[in-house]
Image 1 (tube, helix red, strand yellow):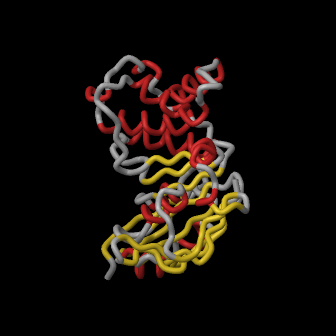
Image 2 (image 1 turned 90 degrees about the vertical axis):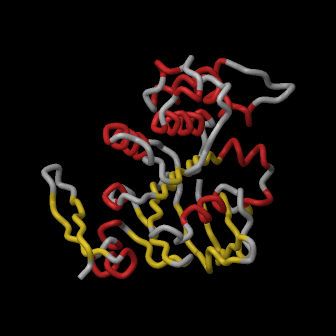
Length: 253
């Protein structure tokens, strides 16, 4: 799915949170959003999901204005995992992930084998198959995060939006999740705090003060001057044995 953001500005209670954002995300691209706390990442993600309407500008999905796409169609094509996502304590893991198939169900279209397959594949992808009978309130924060991601995957979307998806996850599951997200053959937009995780993206956009400060490949964008100006840190890039590079940080001088 191709996403185009045209001169978008957004407010909450008259407070401007995004100002004049213009960008294009190509089909199948892994696009990372980075920026300090309060830079507007979550607001932009909600605009991309169609959950927050821009005060100025618009978001296009395959050329169609997102706010004009029927909610049911939008829910089939776009899956969004928010930072503070939650669900009812009474649901089991299986029932929570099955909710991802809701956009496909109707009085004329009941539960089918394809729905079972989508749920099973999603649970396996996040290593939660053995937890299907567990109740939500018995799960750890990291386990809940994996269930939310499984529910989004069960939607079989064309666009997957993940806002800080590695929060609450231990290091093994952080690595597994980012590997999974990187392998998905769909358009993905991921808001990240970990700048080394952002290095795996095809392109990244840097938000600062509600504006798009920079956009490009990680190697182009994550320069020492930019990191010092936007994040207030000093950074050095080092090669690692697998041929990639890692950033090491210290307080800016």
